[in-house]
Length: 262
Image (cartoon, rainbow, N blue to C red; front, top):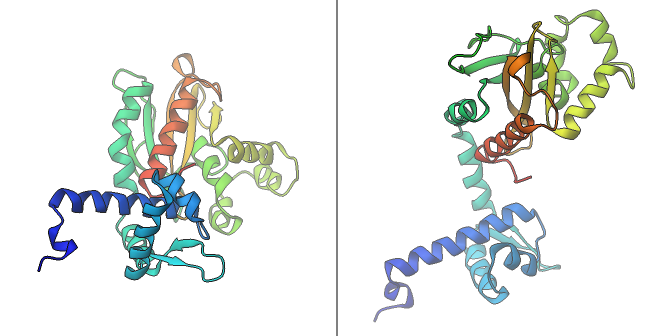
């Protein structure tokens, strides 16, 4: 005798998988101790339907339910799948694939930097054809406290991470890190609050730069994306169109790396 499962058509199975995926995404976005009402609202379905799928997911280890409160969370199987996915994420590759579009959208040379042994290190550059050549190349190390890229890392990394490369910075800037309310600390606080760093001539005279952080699934900074160009053709307003383009790119890149939507 055919069971309910064997009577399902391929399309029905696909729809079931899509529904289950929406439940899992809702659990991931809501965090631990999510109510059935919240889950059904985020997943876009009636509570009764969400409840049926949640019970099936609990049986397979994809979800768990608290005995006392009745609230739901991701189960051990879902966590294991997530960790396996994280292990295979190519940070540089994922962001690099998006970089040419950012270059074309902004009209400026753009690059990606990651944190390495010697500090912020450029790993991919896409130059704007026809723009004045800016001396940035793959493998170059950017100053921690004297570049838009470095300041973005400094705003989001802990002191222990920064310590090995701080010795290369000028003494006055190192001292400012320990002064509450110093110009440097004010700039770092603004970078954290607004999610962007804009500089003019700080590293190279006549050159402006705008940088944004890219976060991973642990909400930790994984890379920095920077646009650079000459003063006369660069929008260096922190709330201008270029800044908005960079911030939107940073969000898209972060989501590609598994960062929670923000």
